[in-house]
Length: 493
Image (tube, rainbow, N blue to C red; front, side, top):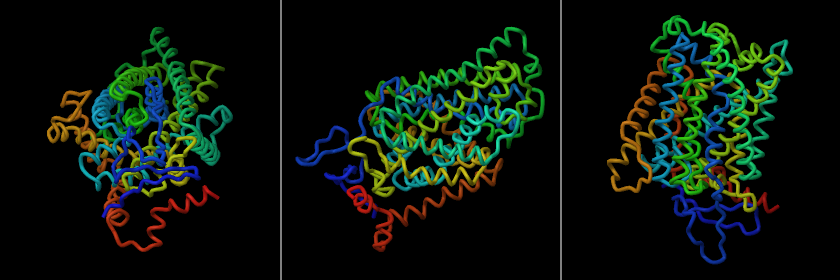
């Protein structure tokens, strides 16, 4: 039998857990006299929504992925095609999520949609793999780029020690976790500021690149599709790098319950954000190739720095700082959104009850934020950047493709469902097919990294029966899986 969460109020403590018989609680419901419900406030406006999407998308990807895409496509022309196609596909996925987010007005993103459409087992596996693989690996990838770029001005003449990168990265991760534990408003305000920093970093690259094109610097675009032939096995990995760079369009759906007027805000924020990001990304890659050849780009560990050193002279020192701020914003947005996923999964009874507690004064899901810290640290010190990318991509796009396929299923299963925003059916069909096809093909392209991701994903099935279905657990086992009383005692002390 599935664990049923319990409504409880901690009058003298710092946290409160709210639930309604295993379903997501209504923000407008009234509590009995003497009980005060503490909920996450509706503080996400259109501007903040745009800043969450752009601020999470533009992070490490545009500064890491050009190398990975070029390696797996073999030519400048095909790499630019992949960047454009991934932008269009991401827009299709974002539009599909806009329909899901305005039809199912609950936080939790992928998890909530899979739960609504396919039931508790696939939803549990989704949150299981998010907790063990996707979010720790994604945060580690972004934060490693943050650590490399923030140290770049101090190691101009020599290679940056890997230990130094990981140590400064660990500090950055800790700061993000503390920030998201302390205040929703401050996290959102800092995200808006960092979004402007990101756009500044992109413009610092695009504007000189456009000037180079005006001067006729097009030698690297001649015979753009010549070079090493792309293999059918390399294209899924190129797709992963491109989609990773655009990843983040789905994070606003993780905080739907905190969005003001979600029926209008979510579609509008998604469309504005994706238009800005897609144009910015394609122009940034064009700018890179006005100055850097394909061979030089493949040899560079920090493409934006190499580019700025060629064109900007002394101003090039500002680029790694802006890029580091960009990565920090992406870390902040990702943790802000995914902590809500764990909070929602806990309310549903799929994670320990402690993760559905909200701080009474700060209104942050503090335990759901803290749980990410040790797991991210393990990923940080146990893998390199590019293997982590392949590792997380398999599980991420498998479940995103499944969630979008659920939209098609809902069209036929629940045709009368209220849909304030509706997309043509070919959009979710094309997006989900592409995701699932690339996921299947990646098992052949990189069997080791994607195979590990596949095996860990499958462990969610026995974990579901062990932690959720098994009804006769020993007392010590129940205490470990639902430790809210220990936590409450610590707060009261």
